[in-house]
Every structure is written in structure tokens, then in C-alpha cells.
Image 1: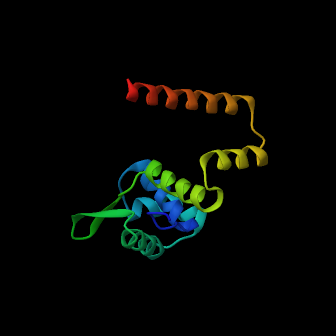
Image 2: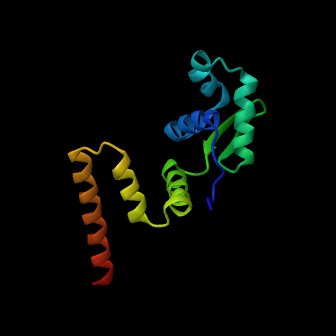
Image 3: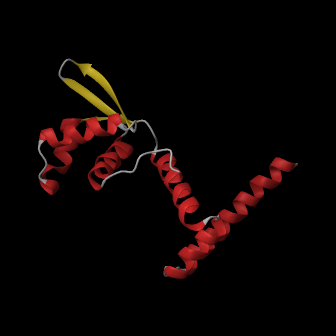
Length: 131
């Protein structure tokens, strides 16, 4: 089971901005997305409040009318948590998950080489732990 709640598409849009910028105001978020999504100031605030309630976003009062929002969890931590949840739910083991992905996707030679490099790197770290 996942330690973090799932993100809706709207939640993800806001989280991506916070993960990229680290901290910003609701008006800065609105300015970035209002033309693309036609959201109101209240819509942005509603999603931010929900993300705060989910424990994914923190809030810092700048003054009586200005608040800044920041991610409580990093993108990498969130992604690792969700990946582990998918692995456990659908595959049962990492090799089965990788095999499933490799069977369905068009994997390039460069991607295979990157996977091999990552495996070698992990093996090197494991060997150092045992020395």
C-alpha cells in the first residue's frame, strides 16, 4: 500500500509547479496556469487546501494576506512511493515489473544501456557495503 495519497490530474499540475519552484504563492500558480486551464483564483486555492490536507503541501504565512506553499514531499520520494505501490500490487517483484515494461514498450538501445549502467552502479554500491 502507498504511503502517499493519489494525485488527481489537477493536483499533479500544482505539485509539478511546486516541485519545480520549491515555494510559491497561489497567485504565482494561477498566473502560470490560468490561460491554459481557465481556473479561477478560488479553484487554485481549493486545490492547494486539499493538497495541504493530504499532507503533501505545507503553508507559510508571509503576512496577513499572503501565503506561500511548498512541497512537503519531493517528487522523487512521491514517485518512489507510487512505484513501490504499483510493483507490489501488480507485479510482486522488481524483475517481473521490469519484464512487463520491457515487453510492452519500444525500448531503445540507449535506454537498455542506461538500465545496465544503473544495475552496475547498484551492484557496485552493494559490494562496497560488504567490504
